[in-house]
Image (cartoon, rainbow, N blue to C red):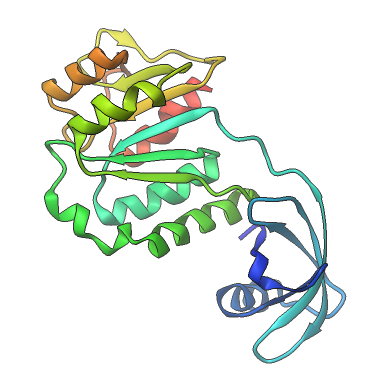
Length: 235
């Protein structure tokens, strides 16, 4: 991790924290710390700064922290993903969080297997774990909002109009005639389908909501390649 993410429960005084568990193990195994050493830290939802180690015990480390720096800016995008396979979802959540996406909608689609929605990966604790790992990787502190939407049509009809308001709504579709734009200077809502893509009904439904169907060239990418490739092209 490139930043030790702190939470309010870590504070034992106004500017003093005690860390245990996973973060303690990482500090001991990776940094090989001594009292007086400084580490990069950030408060979840808040500022970034430094933590100076003040004491080390067998099961905890205490640090005095000074937080002065704002986290990096977010990517101006609403990301809609047809729910990927559970193993893939873990990696995608981590990577898009590191990139700077702050709103993620996991959406059902005809080609999404029903069993995916029963995966423990969708438990709040599991989702948060991947988001935290992404923030630590990117030296960020602002957790993304993750919305689970297991019903395509109600979401498209009831929530989509508000979600895409004042954005450029794009749906990635290999059969589209229009290429994905580059260097967009406004907020984007980007919808990416499952393996095999959105079915025609779903694409037409999104277009009826105001989306533009766009392609990314002749290559068909899996979700792990498509998401960062499209985002880097857009911004």
